[in-house]
Image 1 (cartoon, rainbow, N blue to C red):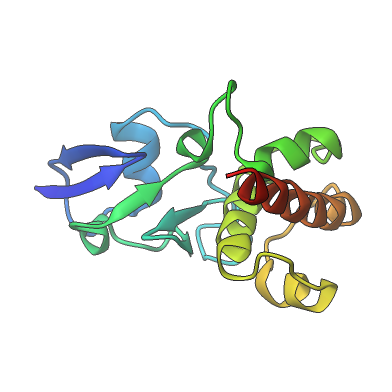
Image 2 (image 1 turned 45 degrees about the horizontal axis):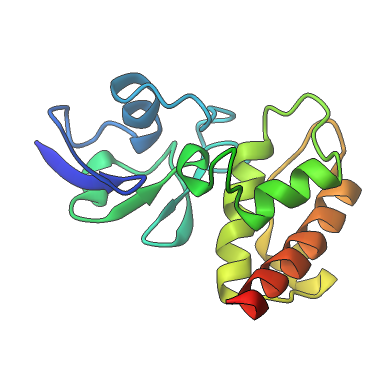
Length: 157
């Protein structure tokens, strides 16, 4: 048994502790936003947050999530109250096929939590996910837009 918090809800799962967290999220809990890309932690399609840190869930054994807080793209925001990253992705019309975008959004959420107004160099250093549709220019615009949205929300509080 492995117990962790998933999108704010305590969860327990009875699987082999070596099972990649990606497959537990998708197959045991039915959350399909986190995608399988390469299985080697190279592409970033499987990126989610574990205790606020962006991790590649295709190579992280579920046992490593014991007692931790796991957030998927489904838990990032809601249709009524989207996370600044989700709002920016919509405003900047980022996705083409969209397959890799949940991983990019999760990596961006982690980046903005650490660096609220990142430079292009900081984005390049931290966002290493791969988009085969080549929407990287829109992704960069959306990251800067999400920083603006986030700072506006913080100023309103």
